Length: 263
Image (tube, rainbow, N blue to C red; front, top):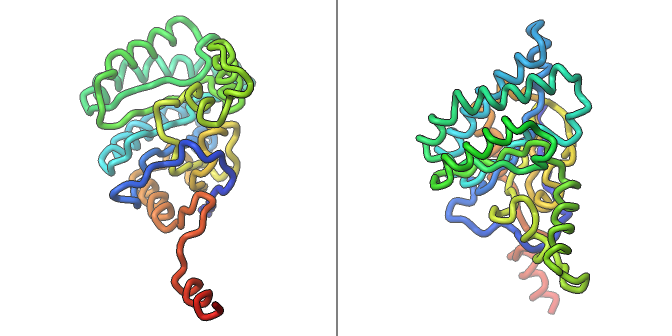
């Protein structure tokens, strides 16, 4: 089953700018769900699925770059994922380090810029150092920016934005949607055009709550390690078929003619 739906709740500022090729989303956000179930089907531990999920991520980065996507944001570890078994959490932290060692040179050479968003305070010094190395190594790349949301939550993002705004001395009367957007974790990126969730669940799960206000939502049963270029193209095809109005009304020739006749 694939379930696609448009989101009509929103904030206004930060709406995606028009593009020459409106069929290709400028910014794609993905909840990479289903790694554990993929592993369980193969009678393997959950971390086995996460390892294969990293491979799918690298392939998806390349596929998005090849199609002209400018920003890709992936939900790697939510602030709620600390509730998972200690063995799995430890394995995920180790996977961050091994993935950086294995793939950093390749993605840097492919023109990928890496940015990490989320609360860095709870992770180990070695993980923070790996993130900083990835950001520093890819800082000058501009083919595609990959935002890795790790220890991230949409509610956390809003709270930290408010705190930073207050620390900068903004008064209550000065806090608007536009001014607060400048303090969000992805302040330099446009809001996502397309939100994809794999694994069959149909919810946002506290991911980019502020930013997905007008994103097109696409849900698929495909488990993340099985997500490939064909699945990505299915999502893009669904996106291209959407009528994006951002709360407005497009001109309808038939309606205009009817109004003229009535007048």
